[in-house]
Image (tube, rainbow, N blue to C red; front, top):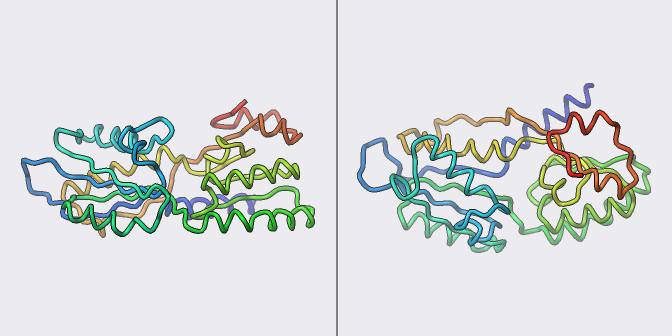
Length: 247
């Protein structure tokens, strides 16, 4: 029980700092005629996905929906300016300067970095082999900037299947991409919550005065296809407790 509580505490603390940071620039509480300009800067999400708000990358749609619920409508009283490094982190400084030069009122920074992802991918096999030699029963994959990129996830899942070694992830997308089990903060809920902070800033609040929040909703995802492929027996109670089950 203690280990379970400690894990939950670590997941809460890690999740509090992931995915989105909101930065105020020139927002003012004074009434204005022109729309507020919201810059969105992504690390890895393709620019076409940002602008098109595809189902593959729902973050932009969730941000827009959350702001609409608070009275902010794109094309009426706000205007989005989308920018993405599309995986090339060296472009981030120039993209950020471009948004500032366009005098945006708020910059929303979204996504994990991918810089050392390839290096991480190359070191994971050795770590996994060590886990197998140590005869561990399972592996917990915690939060980290580079642990949940598509390249790293693909490597983790392939090795887990090869060695029939169950993995529990703290990032839900791992289960969508072939991972066995994930328990962590509801990313969709966090993405929608960003709209609240943008709203506060546009209404005159200082970013430095806004509280740092921890996730309040945690979910459990399970991939039964992976369980079958690995030969892992899942107790009947687990799918019943899971928020989402991939069959």
